[in-house]
Image (cartoon, rainbow, N blue to C red; front, side):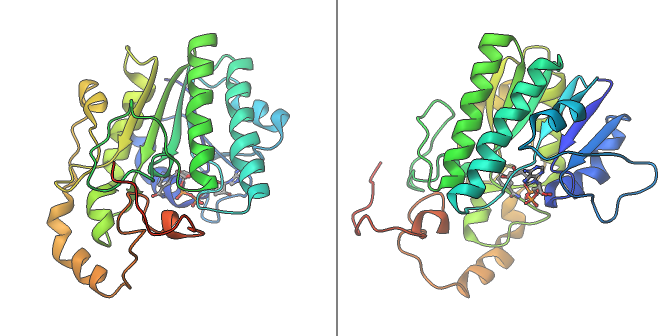
Length: 270
Ligand SMILES: NC(=O)c1ccc[n+]([C@@H]2O[C@H](COP(=O)([O-])OP(=O)(O)OC[C@H]3O[C@@H](n4cnc5c(N)ncnc54)[C@H](O)[C@@H]3O)[C@@H](O)[C@H]2O)c1
């Protein structure tokens, strides 16, 4: 992989990856609509707004791989999600196709499947069940991934990221946490593994309380190093300070499910 473009470079994950990825890929072009505040002289940065196809095409010029982190990363008004995540994601895949990019790794989210109950273990072949407009946009991105993979031969990996951070900070995150180095492992599989065509992985570490069957990632050699249970006491102590949330605590998506929830108290059993 000679040149890799990473969108969303100014964000939380992008900022951490700027510390970890250069050791793996010496030629990275960082991109965002805003310039990272701490950009170093040796880092290559291209400003591009995902809503402008020509800007995205220019950012991807000559690249073999893209890690697509850019977008609105929480629930938001429809117009915001529409611009950055729906139109923006379409532009990313279309620009990749036009510029002959070989591989895309797409930062999807657990919120594409947030309305499954926590007691259900799900794999990657279960239908999407988004818990928010944001989650719908991630399901849309996974659909674009399949279109560009099977119609145009792009090799695409969608990673349904749980929660990225140095440690899991509450009970839900004991199930969905991913350690930064483990995300790097999944990104490397997406950019390098010869058998990638169109894959969906869960972006989770080795979490004993996990809800997801990540067999697809394991088949490609993923060996997560993070163990959420090592941080159990601190996470549960933090959880004890949070108010109960009957809907959010039932479903995998947490507060993304209880926000705006008006379906009544009956909860999906399966
Ligand atoms: N952080 C997590 O735990 C987590 C979990 C699941 C999924 N994800 C996904 O991973 C990606 C990165 O997450 P993050 O936590 O770093 O998010 P973040 O909000 O910190 O960063 C997102 C970046 O995208 C950029 N961006 C937004 N709209 C843009 C546009 N129209 N054009 C160009 N750039 C634009 C922002 O400027 C920002 O720097 C996101 O796609 C997010 O949905 C993150």
